[in-house]
Length: 112
Length: 112
Image (cartoon, rainbow over all chains, first blue to last red; front, side, top):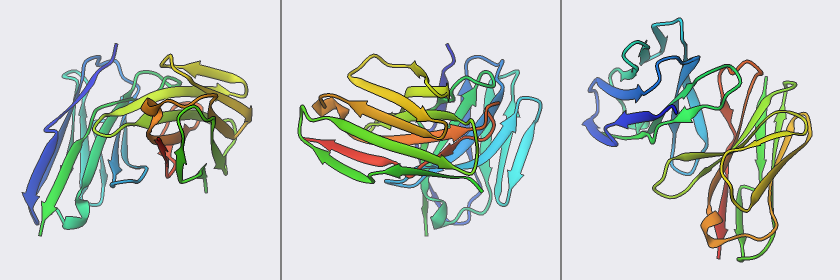
């Protein structure tokens, strides 16, 4: 059974720092991996989707990498801003029609 | 473009009362649909998912049920709410082959 772990559970950094959020999964035979952001009391916003054949995806200051063989993904945030403060969730899909399996998230606080 | 709606946004219900939460997707056809619950301090729990009209898969045995009466409508129901049903309920959709998953704004349910 696929399990997704995100470390650390919480992270606090000063504004302007580059940071990395980690995600690991137990079964490397995944279909794709998706990173989300959730603001308090809100739904999840999709940030990046990486297909199993891809190594990384970029959107603005965000870069997500995927290493299937080691069961890991990282989300890199460059030049962090207070507006980046949120919970970031990683999720993997094992096949095209199976549900996403979520990690418990990393709560990020960027201090001005 | 596609949008996903959930209502109501907030609901306060007494223990033992019935529940009906609605989710509707616009701008796509034949989506995969999902219901999740997020309880305070806990991760995202998949409750039900559907790959087509009348096709419902249940992930967790409980007093909740789901129905998909139309292609883009997904309903979460209960005949008698429990205190433990309190939480944040999120609906989500993907295209049939499990591409990017999009979430609705959520319904916050408080059972008293």
